[in-house]
Length: 113
Length: 114
Picture 1 (tube, each protein chain N blue to C red):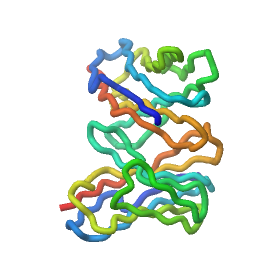
Picture 2: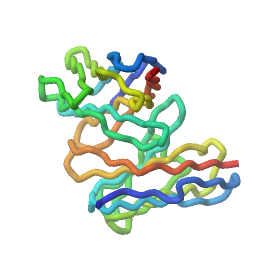
Picture 3: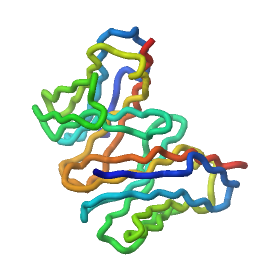
Picture 4: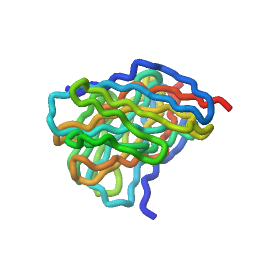
């Protein structure tokens, strides 16, 4: 069955370290998204991509970067992690049409100490 | 810009009773879609129900239904015959315009009491 996976599921890192969170989907969806969940603020969009080699900044993109070299993967990199980036991160994907449902991965809990 | 407001941080309901979760939104787009997502303790985001703005009929999925008031920009979720498995955080979300980006509300924690 097609699915969307994230790895690792849990990660603890030290402040200032670089970390990359993986997102992989097997639906062949063009659209992929990264969100972070902050308690009391719902999910907020970090970056998104509408296809290979396309990336765009969301509302909370500072300190994060993404790259899209193929359809299946959209890795999220924190160049120099800060304690304020401790959060749960969700990846999602959808087909190209504007009205289609986004399918979410299981989430990655990241703790920055 | 799109906004979604969920003003109730938490609610509690007795098992088998009905509960309504409130959501208001704002957008200048004429073409948009509204969603309710459920997030149980497992953290998985699960789509509960969706509503196309151009449809006047309220969406229904088994025990879940919405009251979509387009003029008031209100989109509430009604859960009938509440079950213990309905205990979760519920998010209202808006997808407006041609960019496929979701805007989420802050969420509401629903507890179903046995």
